[in-house]
Length: 85
Image (cartoon, rainbow, N blue to C red):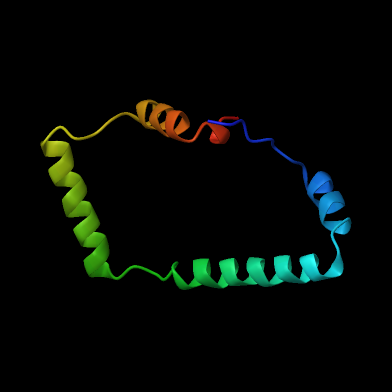
């Protein structure tokens, strides 16, 4: 997978300030849309949903389907290498 460059806030700001006005406006609309979608998808869970999550987790543990936090982090970093610190 291609390396993803990590940009600082100042680098991003510099890139945005170089954009033509119509591109800035499109970026603003896109960011607002993404924010609204993420806000809509982050509703609070009901008690029944939480109990379901707990039951599912307990079943997974009893069946041996689990890993340590360290193993989980390693799997995530292998799948998403740009998340490494």
